[in-house]
Length: 279
Image: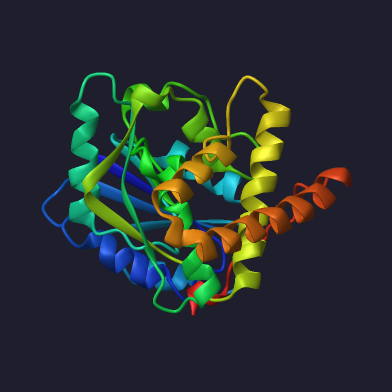
């Protein structure tokens, strides 16, 4: 059985989009979909219950980590997929990606990530034009920003998700490079922020999450793939990207400043998210 866990906190605007896409292609497949509503004050749970085949669990605590662990305990099959409520992943693409777990040595896989920039401003488009050509994205070793799928042997690698901001960073870091894979023949879609300010907020969370991981788990490597050398190499190959690179560097500088402020006061609990992509 294929099991899918979807953590959801006030995702009433997008949960139907997520579930409708996910069920596209799963009709004739033995599967279970578990939506874990955590601390919701909107109608996320009711909207998810409108899908008869979906199991909805409600938690009082607003915690993605608690939702992930609760869903994982409730899941009964493998492969075991984790899907964020604000992404769009078709069930047929999920199945295509999951088949790669039959490859010897592969323990975790994700479909290719497509960044939807239809509503994004020019600076946001510039940032992603650079980001999608740097090693973290381009080496095709699983970009788990919203979706990742575990084999049973991969699930055995850890007991539960730790209390960290970067759940996807943690899960990626505990597997060696040759144990991870991006299934490039299928995709899931993430919706980029609309404005530069929105982008800086969510990228600050990413940076702070990597800082926290490196502090709590110094033996893990998180957030160190995109080096200045990699960006310099990109610019040498494509000098016409200089404007986009300047935007990228500015975003990195601003997020470093904001994350450092939070690190100094040990604020690893504030959770920024982008509402502009959920409209």
